[in-house]
Image 1 (cartoon, rainbow, N blue to C red):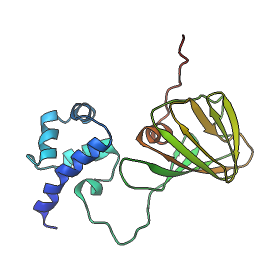
Image 2: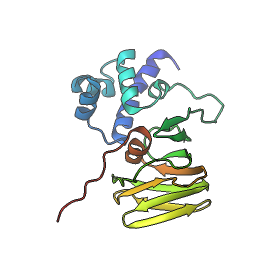
Image 3: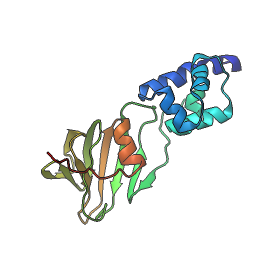
Length: 197
């Protein structure tokens, strides 16, 4: 594809990605330091994207720069994502499509996370399948042990926590949307505070 056509396609791709994630131009501007007018002109094609702008936007959306400029995919369909370790849990991304539901394999060593469980709540929905080992799931007032082959799905507005308090490693396959991804994969959320009647 000629360079001009590549640059023309960036604007609609940026707009679609932002809207898919439910982010306003104001929120994006505040997070990246790029003015709202510049972001608007980028999305409408009124301004040519620079590397500096694209890097800031790719960082915010947590997508590869190639996704923003529409680099053609290679013929190899395999997902080559590096595992990350968060709070002792090895997380292997299994999808590469920005936005929407994401799939992860999560490997919990024995007794991880350590300490008293703290339930969290956030917008979204979660599905998890135990590949091996056993996983403890706290879901509201329920305290469950899921064995290999068992599945749980729940509205994540219900306070929840899952981990491996057992002596053997556990592996799970988990699907969740952007809100769950931010909390479970990218950062440690703050505890849910009980509300008083």
